[in-house]
Amino acid sequence: MPLLEFDIIKKYFSDITTKENSANIHLGIGDDAAIVSIPENKRLVVCTDTLNEAVHFPLKTSAYDIAYKALTVNLSDLAAMGAMPKWFTLNLSLPDVTESWLADFSKGLKSLSDKYQLDLIGGDTTCGPLSISITLAGYVDEEQDLLRSGAKVGDKVYLSGCTGEAAYGLACLSAGEALDEHQQYFVSRLNQPAARVDLGLSLLGIANACIDISDGLVADIAHIAEASQCGVKLDLNAIPLPAIADKEQARHYALSGGDDYELAFTVAASSQTVLEKLISQTDLKITCIGDVVATQGVQLLDKGKPVELSYTGYEHFSNQ
Amino acid sequence: MPLLEFDIIKKYFSDITTKENSANIHLGIGDDAAIVSIPENKRLVVCTDTLNEAVHFPLKTSAYDIAYKALTVNLSDLAAMGAMPKWFTLNLSLPDVTESWLADFSKGLKSLSDKYQLDLIGGDTTCGPLSISITLAGYVDEEQDLLRSGAKVGDKVYLSGCTGEAAYGLACLSAGEALDEHQQYFVSRLNQPAARVDLGLSLLGIANACIDISDGLVADIAHIAEASQCGVKLDLNAIPLPAIADKEQARHYALSGGDDYELAFTVAASSQTVLEKLISQTDLKITCIGDVVATQGVQLLDKGKPVELSYTGYEHFSNQ
Image (tube, rainbow over all chains, first blue to last red; front, top):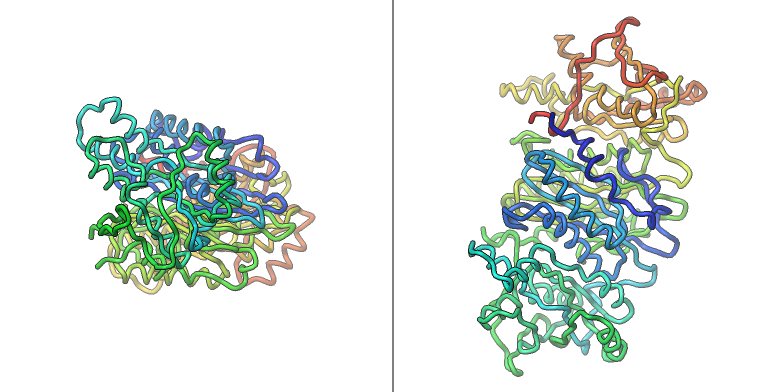
């Protein structure tokens, strides 16, 4: 006897709840819709992302990692907005029902929902090619926000962590050979990326603009530039590189690799002191990689000289 | 040159906005997330549904109808909660980019978002097998709600419209023959179902429990019974039937056919007068089809005698 939709929800998704949010979640899973409220003086920040098999994760990715990544990509969007994540809905399309797969998927969701105190308030479990859409909501204070569009000429541009590691992890997996410990680190960056939620929250009032790096460093920095109607000069030699032997390949991954979910943000000169204090208090590497300038677009400089920008980001429909 | 994701969003999805909601939508499409607030004394009602090609709609369904249905199934969930729909997010997975398809899809969304004054506040457009997930949010007053779990012994059970029409429409399409005008009506019920949003809103304070009929009349009534810890006796001869020649087939469709998005609700004796006034003011057919009883489960009666219940609803994973 196969599990029916209601059984799946009850068995695998009904315990992803917290006590912390209960005052604002009046009705969770089980009716036609959920009912929530927002605390006074807060606004709701809402994002949504889809992961499709063989597009956003390789075919053999574990259910745990798929769930982990599906929630992380959304947590990363809220991190880039300086928002505190609170609850989410899940659309899960499955070609068939395997209890071990569902148990593993549920564990992946729960590891992150426990970490961030998230409630799963609703969803839809359907038959179809493997696909996961999560819609995640969180809070920001009424008078505080962190947008792509706030960069000002004169701001310094910062990056958390190191981009390109997930892309190199994917290359290691695609090679199809046994992975050594060094390679396993990069694969873990692909399969279980970290959303910079705490960093995003601490940037409120410090950064002028912020974005998460999902499509590639240069491509996403270009979104800040465009939204802020300004330009960015990136210092090629300041950009952190994945620790691999081939420096040219490392640079390519760092500039154009997607899926790292680091944050890029801009900070005015007047906020440098408070940023430096923040940097000294976090274990996360924060690197100054460039400047916001008046001339539109993104320019890459090697010891002050412009470098041709052949590195573009990931685009879903660019292979047609 | 194919359209890239950002172009698609700009060209086809950026104008699904209203002036009405602008006070509560602080940031829409274009950043990592949207920012909204909820008016004082309101709560947010949130639902989400996925439509997959060849599972939730036939292969040849037009993009207009797919969009129309994807929004309707969510509007219907909010209708069943007595909520006023306000904004939604869209996850659209496409195998390829066809501008005419996108234009048609966008028109389908816009026809309903204009009708109900909805804002599209965000989404994700990705490459993958055709799949649409919509997450829709609306408002209810703080002290008012309409749940599955509110049915009381002694309530009368009511149904809007007629169930089984969409299922017969699907059968007409599946036959693969040219459709006459009569059959076209049923196909339109499948492809462009009506969400009973106004009815749902007007049932607040009148109905004790409500559900939308998406999986089949008996299956969904059973959800009310289970959530309310009571039972329902349905009068076989009171249930409206699709206008087709074969009465046995019509009955089968009416009891078990999915995709009609009518509302079933229960009303206490003390609210009958106000319900009758409501019925007299609407063009929608509202039929009393049974009673809420203490004995759990759903029982079907033919002139007072129990009939074996061989009609079950649609279940996504039941064919394994």
